[in-house]
Image 1 (spheres, rainbow, N blue to C red):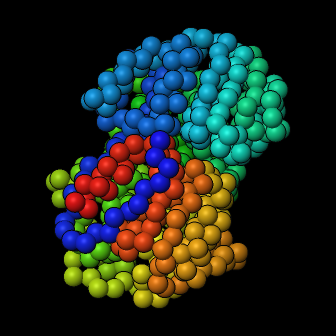
Image 2 (image 1 turned 180 degrees about the vertical axis):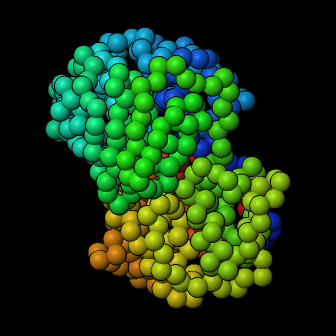
Image 3 (image 1 turned 120 degrees about the horizontal axis):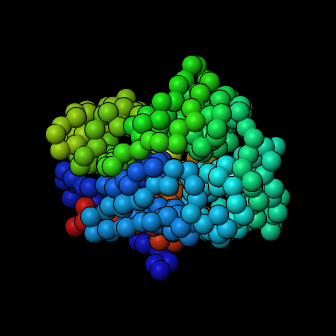
Amino acid sequence: MKKEYRVPKMETVKEIKVQVPGSKSITNRALLLAALSDVSCTLHGILLSDDSRAFLESLKRLGYELRTDEENREVRIQGTGGVIPNSHARINVRSAGTAARFLTVMLAIAGGEYEMEASPQMCRRPMQPLLDILRQAGVQFVFRGEEGHFPFRMFSEGISLEEVCVDTGISSQFASALLMSGVMLDTGLKVILKGGRAGGSYIKMTLAMMRQFGIPVKQEGNVCQVPCCRSFGREKYQVEPDISGACYFYALAPLMGTNVVVKNVHEDSLQGDISFLRLLVNLGCRMKDEEEGILISGEGMEKYPGLEVSMKDFSDQTMTMAVLAPFASGPTLIRDVGHIRFQESDRIGAILTELERMGIQCEEVPDAEGIRIFPGEVQECRVETYEDHRMAMAFTLIGLKTGRITILDPDCCKKTFENYFELIDQITK
């Protein structure tokens, strides 16, 4: 494992053209929906990373028939119509929040006895609101550590649940888990969405994918009605490229004043982070959706403005916007991202700490649930990444601009983007 990565400065600015892995969010939703279906489905273009491998390994331990072709980024999964082949199993979701939330709900509804394990990082992340819903519906938990967190043993004889109210404020994954596995309930499931991200991009993605797999879920305002649906599915499904990963390269357009194309990324993406590209347009870039992929052009840009922006619906890019901010012509205020404190790391605290260590003035703005960052001169810095892949990938951009950054624990990127630093090396040659 690499302990650190000295980021090379981009001395020669040239057009950047890269291909990124498949979307983690879409890969793991597709894996769950394919497992719940009653057909054999081949997923094309999947992400192969720590998170998706944890999901695949968990499905194998649950007895699902899987055939993975890593070279072609494909997996074939035989759906079992909501019946878990191994109803007594031990699984380890590692650091995958999607696997943790999605599989917990699926197994609770299906019934059985399961040992649920996770990495120390995932054991710190919130599960209590979701587990409370399941406990009230008849599921029993025995916690091996802190109450309401991984690891735990779960006993279920199936659950009695017709209607549930879910707060999306801490994690929209709670709602997505209930929406997708709600098809297993004889009565279906009415899901009432509350909180600041009830209409957010990840909920929209979940509903869109359910319909793509043939589940006629209905939505009126913040109320979703999931039908009992034992027979559904599709034989093939194409996973989109990961827009979250693409955004680190697209951010180089204004930062370096260059043109960037990420192959097969298009404006009709299901992923909410596509909104970050429109934010780059607000900074002065030009965007064109071409056959090969979206082109973001920052050619000729010498400076871009500081902005006030709500990133509630694409908060995974908070760190990306934060590392652009020191090079803007004025202050940047990122709003409505308080929930990112509860993700892979306390991302608010991590951003502020690392920017301050490199000499950039910044501050938390509690009333805006966000942070304000001022332009400044970046000092030499070794960036702590807090076991957080997005901290590592985003702060690499400052190094490409200045040549003054070393990333500690670069291997944490394997969570979602195994060859990230290989691509960085390629574009700096």
